[in-house]
Length: 523
Image 1 (cartoon, helix red, strand yellow):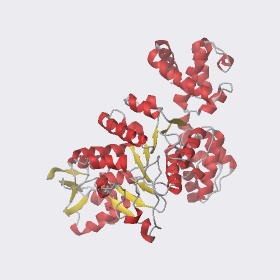
Image 2 (cartoon, rainbow, N blue to C red):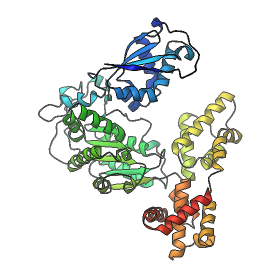
Image 3 (cartoon, helix red, strand yellow):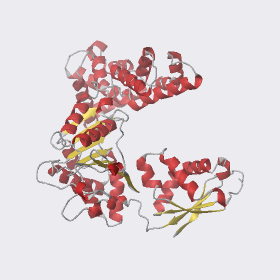
Image 4 (cartoon, helix red, strand yellow):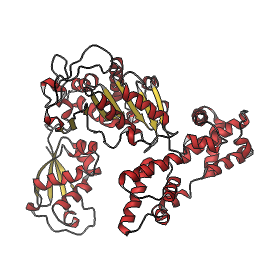
């Protein structure tokens, strides 16, 4: 089947470009272009959308590709066509303008299975119930034995020399590692280990719970629910748990997957009548399930239903479950109450924006790992400027190092200010904690000393909670830091205040009006 409307990558009004020569683009160049893109995209996105695409040929300026279904054409056209053209241009040593008139015709071949690795390992499960992976020797199969959690029989003989080989499929890479087995499209990052995680007041509880899970998976804090904003270290802890479990429990099967990937696999399994294989993969052939971004399941009733039963099957078998989210379980919109209840049945730990000392430690550790000489005053300046995102913090350091290297200059506070100029200008429109406190005092006719006092009468405690809520929502200030800025309160007091105001916004009209008014005043 051919999708008859070829996609014109040029856009309207672009001048005609030279016609491509058929021999300038062939299967070899296509393969090289894909390899180039493999390094630019996440493993998950590459294996989902580009790996299943096959090169058919080039006819003039018409590139013909084979895909599993029409949805692939729409998605690749919208998200990846431009970078595909760029990669082809680079590999063919052609100016980009010569590919500007390139059109793409999509051949639909329903025989292609974009997620074929979903069943590649599940289909190889012997009838006696033992679990194995593609290419795994018979003597290394894991035999289930009675007992709790991860009590599995260890391999009966040493691993062969080639056990480190990778077995690739369209779903992703299935690695048979010397320590444990991590299956799925997302591989563990060797740099994300507990030793490289900087612990502070903002993440101490989450770190301690993660270490406990890694030491006794399936027996302590099951499930473990980690939540917090983007770039604060949830994924780092997830990788660290997987790495530690793999080292201490070499016989277990670990599945690390995003909620989006879980959903894609589930949909594919339904469409291709492979749901039994899907369930076997996640319910029987899984000792540890690490799932990132569980909020992606919000509003997906059928996928939530499937995950609910998967959760129950693993939990009843004392298999470890760890999930992450950007918000507290009850704040995930359109998430079934029974799932929320199960998330809260175990350990719920938050990862908050790091306080100043932790940010400085993170920057110094990153500089040490990258071999960057970073003056103390520059580390302090970056930590004071970039407050709410660890990834942005580390990215800023790397940009600063690259610019210093290009200019052949040492890293100085002046160079740091130049690199962070956009961030500083953007921050001028963001109110400070003091500005929010003042606006709150003006609205409720209070003194600042009352707002920071230990007084608990409602006329003072409610405005204080609203001010804490606004600081948290608008500035992302960490709970410990907010506690300090409001008269030395404990960070748990701030957490409770934010949660209280969040619930009052739905039930109390006066609180909602106060927050709305203050939001408008703050701009």
